[in-house]
Length: 570
Image (tube, rainbow, N blue to C red; front, side, top):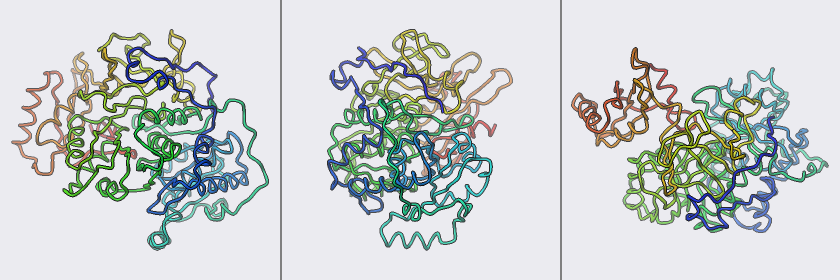
């Protein structure tokens, strides 16, 4: 595993953002605690408070602490030691969250994998991490029936998604999945129930002096532009998100409710959807699987005070247009994971207003290499494209692409981040680590995000798009996101994604993939109208060379637009 030497982290009261936070808020002090210890700080003082809710079955912090102890004990029985890597292939179930904290309690590292990953992806990840123990949801059993011969896996612990459900739902789940999932190799397979019966007299490993820089978590990069990379994050990275959240969402009170609908194998879902709320005493509603169209119904059922979602989830919420729906209990609605178009942002805010929610959707910006969000826009800026200001203790600068030279205010360049949530590095990939994490002339460590953006004189940050998505046509820089937002302002368009396609002499040109609204039919008249709209509102070199009208746009496993697939179609 790559563990970087202790390099200074950039934490300063940058003048552009001094007016937005108090002096105390700007100086983020991450306590010298492990992720488990950060959770324990609140839990052991409030044993009777509700910690999580799973299909209506609720557990207290006291019960959760006992569950974590039991799992930690069982892991040590399997020989898991400090700095060992335990792979967790789970959706949002209590067992996934409990396993995450239990692994951390004994000083090991959780390697989180999407259950919908392919067999090959899981195999490569297991080989790269050297995991000996895998905790896996029943729906992914089949993927572990192959390839294990060339990994170091010694034990597979299987978990049913129905284990923690109320009795009537558990019985229904058991009937529905009976004989559906073939268990992996019986010689190394063990059920969760049998796993919990294991006991040991061993004690937890001795605590080291500074645990903040010790690895706690491995998350997988999206992998939409190539092979996925393991991103190693420290205890300090994960806990810094809690410290920042207490400043960002200060209206929340203990025993408020959060909707943990984003997955735990995603930095946004694990850090902001699970760890931060639990450390703040907020009851976490765990949703393991759902359909986008059910998002509105789920919100109405659990009445959360804070919701974390990606743009596609909020699109699903808009489909639940019950006039009697009252969302006045919402204190925050944060959108991240993908760029939020101005058109969708307006529709979400209109929906909230119609249904009595006195909030607007807050756009966040981040990347897994910084765990989750590093910029947040809560009541700060309404301008199109504005993603807000850096989270407390985080610094942002804009540099010329492929350099470290800072650009002037208002100029576009690559977004660089320095702050307490930065990764330690990419697992077993020193070259990629050194490309992403660079020490600048100021002596501080900066993460080069690969995103294009700008900062105005007031310190507001504007996101343009991925550097890799920029189209260079006849020498002009073309930003697909600008074209997408322009096309989405047309009355007939529901969503649009623009990709670059090869051209014999322009090198590359823009192709617009368009989905029409339900009440519009794909006709030559509608197509002509959209093309004329582009000719009026876009520069000539920005206008799409090709228009592709579709029923839907392909998505990655994380629910983002699959740009790579759209480009490969050409």
